[in-house]
Image (cartoon, rainbow, N blue to C red; front, side, top):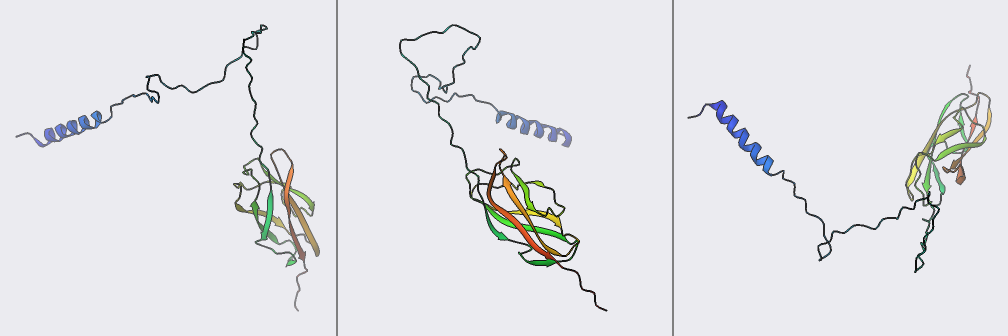
Length: 186
């Protein structure tokens, strides 16, 4: 009878042999043709631009150039999620403004899309911010952290989406609120 350690070693070698035989690599070429020729996809011809010689052929060859259709950008405002128009806030209050918008264009918004301040009061927010990435046809939430002014009054801040080509698009979005003096009771 074999000692226990030798039996364990033999079992490990047997398992290893089974595993290694299952790892054989078979390379079978994909062949869609019955004549045995392997399919190679067409490639573009490389033209030597240093050559000054032009060769003519008996049959003219023309290349048709097609451009991919460009996508369109469109942002549609759908709802104020926080701080509805006309909300009263205290002087210096932090404002967490959130809008629901929909990407109704055919372009997907990526990290190259921006949201820029275009008018009114900037409210201590950065004048240019990343537009949240959104696929075409989806809704998303735009959020900007702002601070209310110290002086009482009506305030409005306007923001616009910009494409990677720095072109404005879609509906502008706004925050519109009142700063009211806090009443002190005796």
